[in-house]
Amino acid sequence: MQFLEKDLLTLAIPGPGSAEWNQERIALAAEVLRDSGSLRLRVRGESMLPALWPGDLAEIQSCTVQQVSPGEIVLALREGRFFLHRLLALRPPNGFLLRGDSMPGADPEFSDYELVGKLVRRQGNIRSLAASRWSRAIGYLFCYCGPARRAALKLYSQRERRSRAYQAANGAPEVGAADIGTS
Image 1: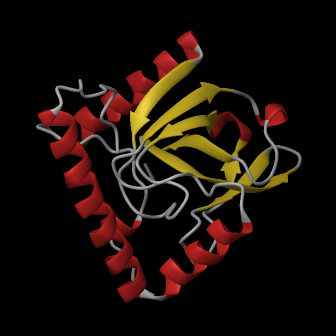
Image 2: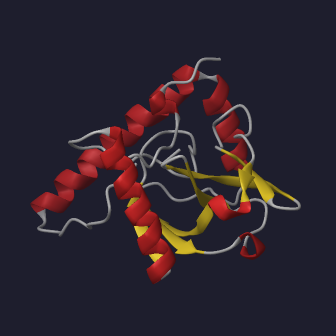
């Protein structure tokens, strides 16, 4: 199965500049998270469908490997990229495995020092299914059935547009956050 950048839940920051510029911004975001204890990021990519959708705001809290357990969604930093995926297992003495809900396999093993935080809250139009068995089942469907993924994303984007139009018409302020994309 071939994966495209859009298939990954990436926290690569879109915008002007080079890859080095994005890596510097991600390193700065990781430093802010470590110093302040929390950070809000805008989700980009599709690898965590249906638990996280493109455009959702994810609130991340700084933590260590000892403070997380399998099943939680965590943020890891590797080679200048953020990965916001579900923790599959801790791999003693100093590693852990992650996997996107709608991805066919686990990511390569991470080292303990690459963990920077865990998801504590998300804000989006679709209610979170993060802890339910249905989330994993739907993620599996999205992993292997492209038409189902595309249909869900199309419905979601239409709902987002209607929601933004409604908020703009009623003078609701738009919530701001670091616009950092996730893998």
